[in-house]
Image 1 (cartoon, helix red, strand yellow):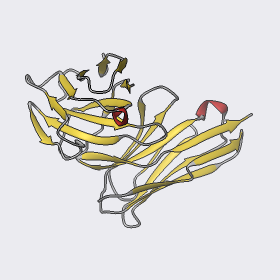
Image 2 (cartoon, one colour):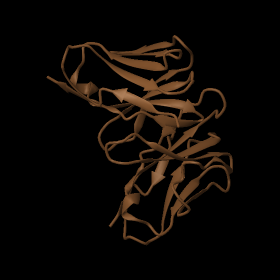
Image 3 (cartoon, helix red, strand yellow):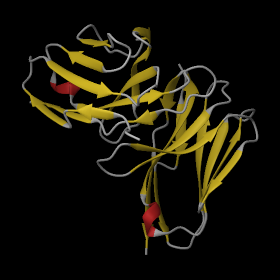
Image 4 (tube, helix red, strand yellow):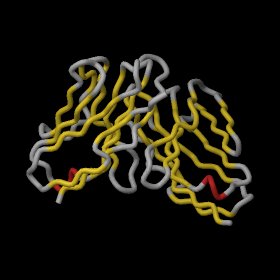
Length: 115
Length: 108
């Protein structure tokens, strides 16, 4: 079956611009996660959705970052007034069962470059 | 804040040799995962460890979990070049806390 997909695969933008990154989770997975991975680092948690609601957004670095999942499936991560420090790979993951064990399946990521 | 530390960070080993990667974490959890990441690629799930004493094996890789010691190990047996990648452990506290990663290079 289809895995987690993310679009675009690469995004280059200028400092100060607005970007949207999209994630399509595995069909039927109720939990969806966003992570950010900087070069040479492990993924860092940003936000977790259970259904349509953000169950934990404690990893969002500041109010320039926002994510939505209006119908409980596709999610969009939105970054306003991008800064060069936002450059990273943004990974999305989904899982079937958010309670108990929680194997997360990752998408290929979106590489964001802010010039 | 939960800390997850892996060591070594970098590992270069010859084909045929054995080695162990360690993952230490700073709080109580009985759910730990190992992932593999190839350069420019996403994370591939390797092992799911859900209880103290859990041991899982797949090919030349074996993972174990000691929740009392807050330690997981990933043991490599008779390494081959195809195992070259970065390996991450992740502690499950609903969100995942990832380790720093171990970059493994297997030399022919």
